Every structure is written in structure tokens, then in C-alpha cells.
Amino acid sequence: MAIKHVLVVDDALTELVYLSEILSKHGYAVRTATNGEEAMRSLAEQKPDAILMDVVMPGQNGYQLTRALSKDPAYSAIPVVICTSKSQESDRVWGMRQGARDYLVKPIRAEQLLASLRALG
Image 1 (cartoon, rainbow, N blue to C red):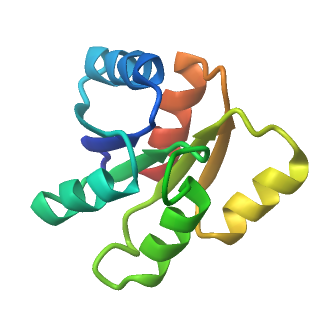
Image 2: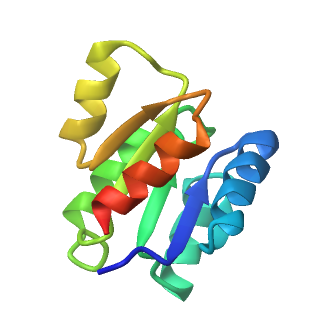
């Protein structure tokens, strides 16, 4: 299945704009959410083909939300790519254990992001 619709979840407006612009310029349809609660509302409205997930957010963090999505039959097929500033190997391992399909460390380069999405689709 080709990835066409992407949900970007990040509490930093600059990151939302940056990632959304990269994706939009390359033909992806993009929706955004600034926290886990918004992300769940967005998912209930329309399931994306992939989710870009920040880790450090108020309320439910990205690890918790990724774990919840991976265990929910309604959303478990949606691949999650964690996009975070947490760069330790233990962070990456933990993110993948929560159900993420890829783990990208900020600042994220456009080529890196696009390659990750192509690999998923």
C-alpha cells in the first residue's frame, strides 16, 4: 500500500510546519495534531496511511500513544514513525519496542523522512 495520507503529531508548531511542508511538496496529504488527544480525534475522523510521532508532548507522550495505537486493532496496521530529539540508542530501542516502524532523530532531513515513508509503503 502506497503512503498518501500522513498524520503529523508534534506539540512544536515549527516542527509541524516544517514536516508538513516537506510532505506536501512531495504530494502527501497531511493532517496535524499537537497532542495525543487531538491525534486520537483525528484518527477517529479519518485513518491516515502513516503517522509521524513526536515523543516529548504534554499529556500522553509519543511512546505511550504509539504503544496504545499498536495494541488497538482499529489502528495497529497504521505504521508509526517516531520523530524526536531523543537521540540515545536506548530511546530508539524503547520507541521500536512500543510499536514504531522507524525512529528518526531531529533535525530530520527531507531525504531521510521521504525514504522512511517510501520504505513503509
